[in-house]
Length: 371
Image 1 (cartoon, helix red, strand yellow):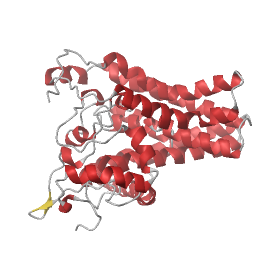
Image 2 (cartoon, rainbow, N blue to C red):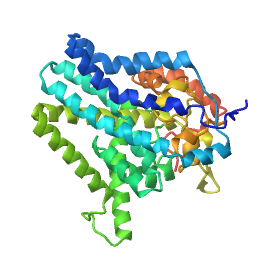
Image 3 (spheres, helix red, strand yellow):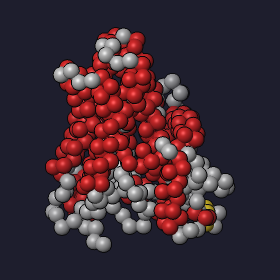
Image 4 (cartoon, rainbow, N blue to C red):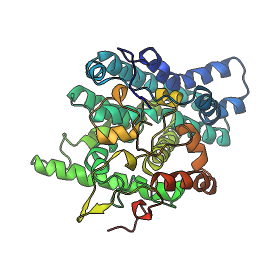
């Protein structure tokens, strides 16, 4: 299949603002409440939109294998349009977080509705981590600062340092807490991955500061910088809307963390880089799951083109390629997120695809037992 686009510009250029849809969900919910919509319907709206509407649109629009040419990619890398879009989306997510806390503080929801609303909004606000992920790989100091702000907004300020120093080094090996093992459920994986990533970030951050001759509490500690952003956000929520809103903010952040665990679970499930002559083979496309479905790649800024990201970590999202040789997911991320919540269903669908991609070679499975 010819995956090179004949376009001289990005064929999705005018469509990337679809990413603005996610932070606009909360203003839409606020408007629906003002018009008298049932509270249960509003509380369930984020979950229905992601698992229902997005998954349906996923299959309605189908797959998109188009890539930009190398010459076009070089032009797109320097185009400020894409960075500006990420900056705008981050600002809208700040507004979304504050409006969500305002809704809950108004007392319109009961306890169960608050939990459902918070879980759904965790899924909706997870792109803040994607923005932090994207900008955290950038060479620009300004971009990396915005990455820390985006991550700090949802109490995930430790992500970038562990992702760069740990995950990209140990991906698809038992040493990586963010690489799911064969037969491991999402729930078991999250219990291992969430603390593993946090502790890995602390170790990597400490080692980085030691190399610079600084202590753990130095202002250059990027994890502490992220915590400052989190504390400012939590303080703002508490002062503006009260302790109930603070509890909701904590719930929303926890839901974002679990959502990122689902994304990590999806990205490398069951795949191992083999040992060759005592060393791990280089990371190649077959070590990451890809999804070429068009609509969620717009929503999630090409996160689903994960194989190319691990091969070329510095490439910005707009130039990532859909590559041959990677195992292909049967749906976009919204659909597979729903699938993994029922582990037997996940195994029944994914394991045959995985074994076919690995040519039934069990030595290429990440079982967690490899040395």
